[in-house]
Amino acid sequence: MDTQDDFVAARRSSWQALEELLGREVELHLLPPPAISQAGALYRDLCADLMRARSAGYDHELVTHLDGLAARAHNLLHGARPVELGALTEFVARSFPRALRRNARFFAIASALFVLPMAGALAATLLDPDFATAILPKSALEGAARSYAEGLQGRESSTDATMAGFYIRNNIGIAFRCFSAGILFGLGAAFFLLYNGLVIGATIGFVIARGHGENILTFVCGHAPFELTAICIAGGAGIQMGYAMIRTGGRTRLGSLRAAAPEVGAVVGGAALMLLIAAMVEGFWSPSGAPPPLKWAVAAIFTILVAAYLALAGRRGGGR
Image (cartoon, rainbow, N blue to C red; front, side):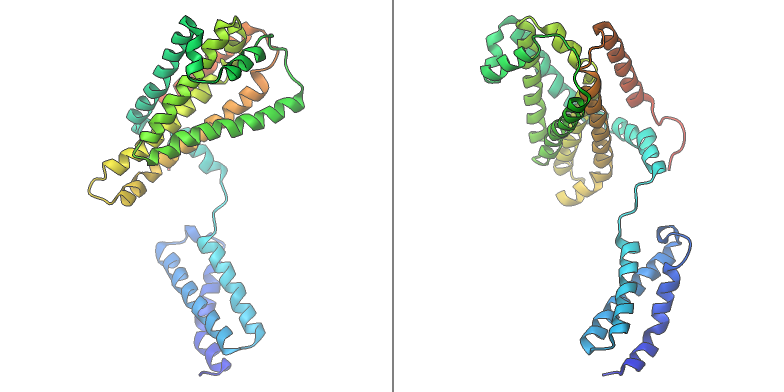
């Protein structure tokens, strides 16, 4: 077995080369590809040297030095990069709307699976309120009707903040189920879209049938453009994921999912941001005591902005 001095003499140049790469002012991921590859190779050699030094019982000072160098290299090579404002702006302004338009057919399918059952349940409940009890327990429906029996008078700010947190959790939970269930060849996503459409339509129809339609519609009109659109977007991503497992293009199913992951991830990320906006609106604006005409005017503006953003954002400019 080599002595410690022989070991250090043989390996010192490799350690110094790695330290020079790590000590550059330019971030490691911005270096030329050969330099990044060299850093990876030197890091792997360093890990082997560290294990050798430990097993040979070399001085604690040497082992500590190698351990610290290995930790630095690991963090730079494998650590997650911090979120950059420019990257987030690029995603919101270009990447997300472009990805959604490239996969518009899945969004259209999801919208049909969600909107048509919602409209059908709403119409059927208005004609016969007992229809809603085939979808939800009557006690839950009566509770919803009672909660909208009185006009919107606003809430305390602390209550608004608490409810905003609840809405974030609830909205993302619904969208996540619509997306993640797509792993069942898209059928799970289709089921949750249809089910949530029926539930929403039946609930709104039942409350309207009880005579509180103006209250519930004034409440939901503000956040609906963001929330309902985001649910359809997330469901479309789930259907797209299921489609990738069926239409593999000669790949394995796992390989096909990996190939679709960038597009699916961009769409789901955009849906999550829209749900966050919806939760803020639902928590602070929707229950406020603002006059109904103002709320409807704001809802119209939100609807136009969402439609224009999804249709037009990112059509100009190259983007990274």
